[in-house]
Amino acid sequence: MMGVHVRNIVSAVLLLAASALPVIAATSKAAGSEKVTVCQLERVLAAAQGKPDAEVARQLSGLELIERMNSAKLVRWQVAFPGERTRQALLILADSSVFLDPPNEEIPANRTPDSAALRQMLVQVVNYVNTTLHQFAELHCNAGDNRL
Image 1 (cartoon, helix red, strand yellow):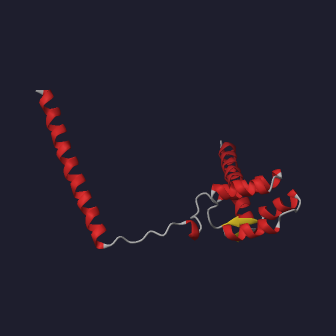
Image 2 (cartoon, rainbow, N blue to C red):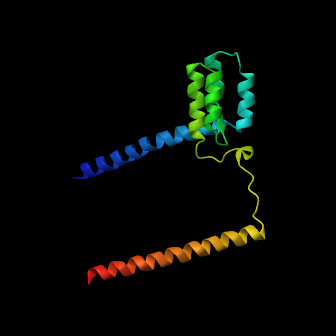
Image 3 (tube, helix red, strand yellow):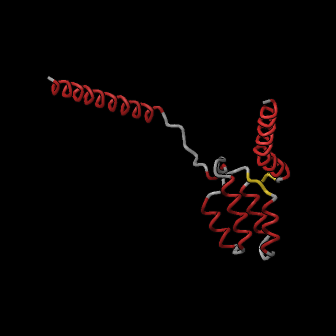
């Protein structure tokens, strides 16, 4: 009976160790990666024009984006670098950056509305709420009439 218990503990420890390996590998890769912006990546790619596919892919594999790469740039760079390894490396960079913020130059500058615009928005909100509540009350009353 004691042997079964020890075997279960050993199995659990091995399972935990095996599940931690991908996390350790990803952490060690990220630690050795050079963090770059999309603009810096663009400069790297401009300097890599004409180099062999394997060399460009190796260089890209050592990079980690700190901003989101948009799909238009990905397509443009994949056309400019037709090598399969480079295209895969670019796709990996794009996919790993999907949840990051876009570069500042891609974020539209929204102005703060002035007081007249704010007042107009508030009037529209109040009108919407009043109309919706009124329609909801009519719907609720009509539904009650059908039950009688």
